[in-house]
Image (cartoon, helix red, strand yellow):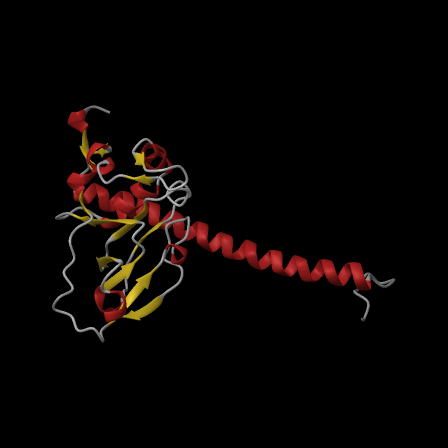
Length: 205
């Protein structure tokens, strides 16, 4: 991929944009997202709220539709991150171990999210880790160096829609598999403890 056909990720998204919370009252309820609240598949899984006065300082602040990218090992390699939507009052605070990215202009946040979750992105990011062993973190400069194909906002939207549809199908399939596993567990217990009668029916307990 030539430079003419690619673009630095930081040209598509602001990296760690400043969020001013001065205008908001301490009693305002906001979303709080720790590292354990996002999945390795890039989902915001556990929704919590905090009083802004309790999280205004000492945490990373972000806004509706921002992208979270875990920067610390091994969370980064494991795919921790999320596209945060539906936040309380449109404001979130959370772990300082997140890089925050915000789509610039007409660039599609979902498209950028899929890039951030891609294994190739995470592998490339390893080369930009710094810090002591066991506490290494991806440096923000990674997003200046990491280049992705140059697509128009329309093309980005189309790609994101296809990938979102695929993810939804995977989630539904995983839910069905999980339910079938529960059924199998119960059936296994009944068959092994009760057995079948001469007619092939499960015996009464």
